[in-house]
Length: 216
Length: 286
Image (cartoon, rainbow over all chains, first blue to last red; front, side, top):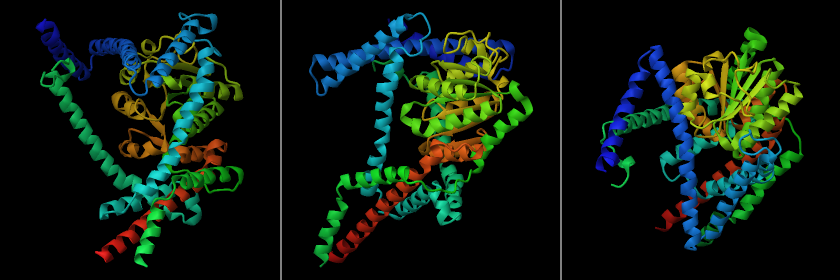
């Protein structure tokens, strides 16, 4: 059991990790073909994980309903929404599930008249929260915060066309802030993230990082 | 006097959020009703995307193709739909073939409706002038797969038709056979994935269109040349509409956005003014 639970996954991670790295640096048609097959396999694995996600979603919300946890009513809506969409997806306006999704079916209707306005509304009310939060929290409490505040105001104003009516230099200053100070910082962050990603990948390949095996 | 001032400032500090909401609401509503012109000048990053599409049209004609990746859903529709419409209008106007797809499953229906609208307007034929490949899982892996073997990544389109039989896709072996790729991105599974797993590996021309809040993230890619251009937020969409000579939703959206930004800046400055006065009285008292 220990072999199946620990040793085999470690061997698989080591072999597939090195295989992917090696294939990446071999510009040969066989290497390219193997890589293409591997990527197809990964897409299939990605699709399979959707079923695990559904299982996780159901078990979480089922337990919430069963235990009458706080907000369990919302869980019933999650499950009802999922079941209704699945039913319409399988029915597929009479063409059933093995045909491509037909136009103007139940899914399209729900998407257009329920999902679409709900999601757009959720996002649009952000403007109100941002205004309120900015008024209460965006304070020049230190020199650094003051610099950030001034830069934010210049960019916020300079990126809308009305700034051009005040002075043509304001959009230029806003663009300069984005092109230079912003870019330098973003680049540093990208490098940091990339190095972190590489080191984590190597830790997994060499079996140092084992949290993905679970249980420990 | 000082205590009275401090008391009043405290009241201002705790300004009822409903007043803020009301002012933001009015700053959005009134400019929609009252029309006025604003100077919209396209920046170099927006111009680069526009010019690239013009170049493809000039050099390839109807054999030229662009790929639009609809990597967004309804939440960012307000910013990205005007960009999608302008890019499609530009491609269709220049008789380019459009291949569309998406990394976001929730954006499939939205992409379909935008594509259908524009195809109808420009009288474009499905399969010959445009194709919609729909959603496939994988994001990074899918992009790598498109670079290796396009047909195995998309054997069929979103309507179940074989991509080998559609005029717009039958000659595409890898993503390098497409002249220009543009990702319309609202988050993870978008521009960054196209840069890292697509542009860097297969060296095709890539442009980006994204929400305003994300635009700052992509400047390093612009300078390195991994992105040849970027349309950022509704302001970027308005710039593209202006370049195209087809002012629409984004251009009219610049009025409320400009006024709302001014109101927001006013609140930030006012909040800081109250904060500094309060600090001044606190230090005086101590």
